[in-house]
Length: 434
Image 1: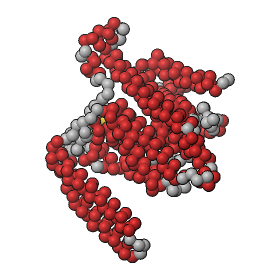
Image 2: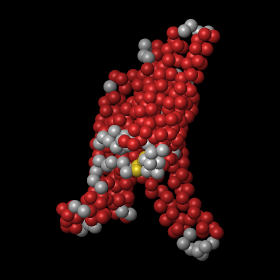
Image 3: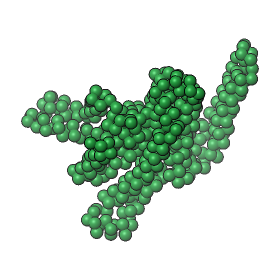
Image 4: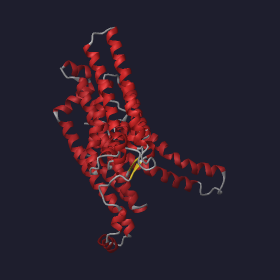
């Protein structure tokens, strides 16, 4: 069997699974799986750039995804005028003072000769700068968060179209990746993993606690949408007429229309990123990255700047994850910092890359769809299986109740089994790297 035919069969099976979900369960469920599969494929592409191209073990994925989600608020939500008037400028001035303190300390470190004087000057700059920063910043934050705290209490955004937040999310994640990469890319792979995980947790902690920025755990709801609202479609006589002529309930038709609109937008983004990733893979730059991945010492001996190239690919992969994070938040319609869990945005994405085929962009896309489908469907399938197996037992018995309650854990068990089977029988993934 040729490679192209085998790959076509893989994607055809995925398509049949999604279509079967629509026919057996509901088309709303099928489109939800399709949309999240598209976003998952984009995140898997980002991780594949870092690991498959360069061998960088980044387990801080959720931090970059969260920054993408934050970008939707900062870009598309309208500014809160009262909050800006109360303390917005003071917050910005405080942040500028904090940045200036860090720059001044770095300047002193470079300009002064190593020794006691250098240390004392740096400590003095950092201590004085910290207290000045907190004095200015804290007062501004307190004033902002006191403005309509139950519904607002934050500065808001720029009021731009929501689609603009997707590339902004990539830029925001790329900027964070540059800072992280400068500090962590010189570390060994296991230490790099620990560092990226810790920094991702810091990002999530900041988003949860800094209410002035995006309301923290109070969440930002009512994000603008790139597609129509269901209620607007249901109040549109022409849409209702078309839905009725097709034999559909207008309420269901409006939901399907919105989800299909998201699917079209997500597909366009995935195709663009996939084409760019393939072009990068086949370019001299991509071959150089794989040479560095396979043997850093030999590549460095040939004159390649390994650290600089690692920083490039780390920024690119993180930017892709940031774009995906903005897309997820747009789909959800709200920013919920507590939803950024390591299981969902780290282990699951890594599993997609491993199952699909590390180093192969098409494999990463396939892994995104396959793993997300099972992540969604395993629990109801497990509940149906256990219900069938326990159908002969008397209702209310402890064993039957225990087995039925265990269905909720089928999802985690299945993910572990899939990972073990792939690593044992097909460690290069469904579509291995050439």
